[in-house]
Image 1: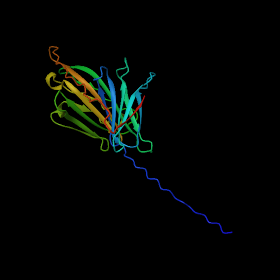
Image 2 (image 1 turned 60 degrees about the vertical axis):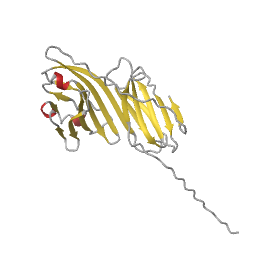
Image 3 (image 1 turned 45 degrees about the vertical axis):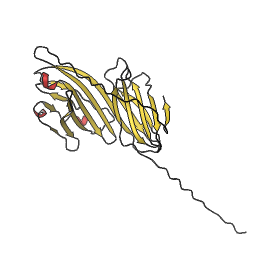
Image 4 (image 1 turned 90 degrees about the vertical axis):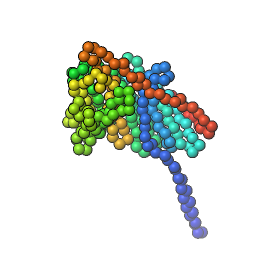
Amino acid sequence: MLSVCVCVCVCVCVCAAPIRGLALELSRLSGYEEMKCTVRNVFPAPRVTWATEPPTFEDLRPVTRMLADKQGLYMVDSRLRLLKGQSDLVYICKVATPYGGPAWTASLREREIRGTQGRDLTIPCSAPSYLNHPSLEWSFSGGEDPSHILTYDSRSGRSVSTAPWDSHVELDGFRVPFGDGSLRLMDPRHSEHTGSYTCRFSVPYGAHTERTDVTIDGPDGEVTPRANTAVSHRALKGKDGLEEKKTA
């Protein structure tokens, strides 16, 4: 008897829209402070996790919403309330896809410090442990459009500052590879240097941002009211043809 074997091959094509960016910001619109982590146009639905540095013993209870549009692409909105009594925490949002692509990570810390006109002031900025050999950028906003202060290139180990900041700032380039990107503000002026300073460490698929609101007291203790730096967000609402998926 002649035996016949028939082999059937089935090909399955899986389409994926990889993560191309991750946004993390502080929101105050809901009546309390919360971190908002956002990803757009991704498929399949990713997994979002939160952490803090240093780690905390309190349970983190984020609320994550995933909305799929008519093409099946997801927009992810994950929010985490700030923990009370722990003002110096770094909040870390990590987004990963189920098919094994690179995970994206973003983290944020905000603080306020005061200085005195004419006295050098160090604005701290430290990279979390998950960043290795990051590049660094500093910028400033005094209520207007942000101005660039300096850039540190991790490949060359050099920093370049822009006018008029080059005569007022100093960065220790030997400390940046070890996660210390603190900026020394020299001879600060009350009217020129009160505002919001932002440092941003970045690597492929990851970034850490620290935003410091600096108040420089004038020669007679004069203080300039700090501009409201709260970020405005539009509420995430379902639309026709959208599928809403909620996870706690």
